[in-house]
Image (cartoon, rainbow, N blue to C red):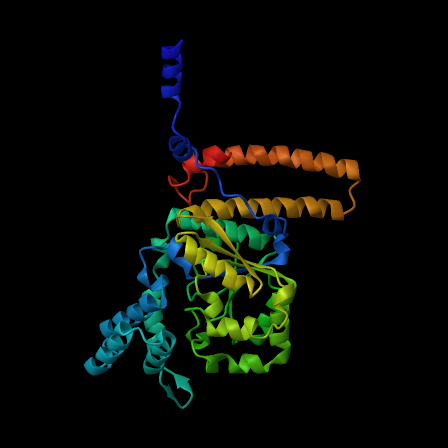
Length: 381
C-alpha cells in the first residue's frame, strides 16, 4: 500500500507545472468591464503603435521618431553637416526631446511669406507612409478590439502621428476620419459625439503636416476657443478615459493642457490605465501616483504579448453588456429580456468557440494566421 501511494504522489504534477500548462486569464476589473462603450474615451499611445509594427523604431519613442526624421532629412540632403551633428548630439544627450523635435520641424519647414515648404512633409511620408506592410498580426488583433469599441460608441484620441488604426479599419470596410486640433469645427463635433468614427490626433497626423503640434504654442489658438475646449474637457469629467499603451501620456504637455490642468475635482473621476506589471515596486508606485489623478492602474499581464488577449476579452465583455442594456432600454418585457440574454450568452459561447477555431482556420484573411494566442484562447474558451 505504501508503495502504491508513493507512485500516485509521484504522478501528480508540480504546482508550477500546472500553472505553466494552463495560465489563468487575468481577471477584468468590475468597474471597467461594466462600462458601456459609449461611456469610454480610448487614449491610444505609442505602446499600441509599437505593438502593431514593432520593427519600426519611429513608433516606439520620441527618440526613435526624431532619429527617423533626421535620417530622412540627411537622405534628402536637407541639413548641413554641422546642423545634422548638432541635432544628433542633442539626441544623444537626451535633452528635452519635444524641443529637439520642434526645432527640427522648424528647420525643415521654414515659413516664407506664409508659405510652408514641403520638406517636412516629405520626411514624414518617408517615415510613416510604408507602415501598412509592417503591421503584424498580434497588433492587428489589438486594433480590431479598438475598432469594435468604436463601432459600439467609444471615442478615440491618440498622441500618435501614424494612422495605423485608420488603415486597419479601412481593410475591415469601416472608414475612420483623422482629425487634428486645427479643425475646430470637427473637433467640436467629435467632442459632442457627432463624429464617433473619427480619431482625434492631439499632436496631429502625418498626412497633415501643418497640424503637427509639439510645442505648447502650437495649440494656443485651440485653447483660446472656449467652446471647443469646454466640450473636450467635459469628456474628461463625464466619461471614463481608458489609457492604452500610454506609458507617459499623462506627462504630455498637450494632454495636461487639454485635460489634467483644466479639471480641478479629480476625486470624482474614474479613469483607467492598462499597463504591464514587470517590476512590482514600480507598478505600485505608478498605481499610487495615478490614483491622485483619478486614474486606476490595471495590470494586463507581465508581458507585452498579454495585452491583445486581455483587451479582446475586455472589449467583448463591454460590447456584450452594452447590447444587453440597450435591449432592456428599448422596452422589452423583463421575461423576454432574460430569454434574450440567455440566448445571447449561449450565442456568445458559440462565438467564442468559433473565434478560437477561426484563429486556426484563418477566418479573417487580413489578420492572417495567429500563433501567439492559440493556447490561451483554447483555455479561456
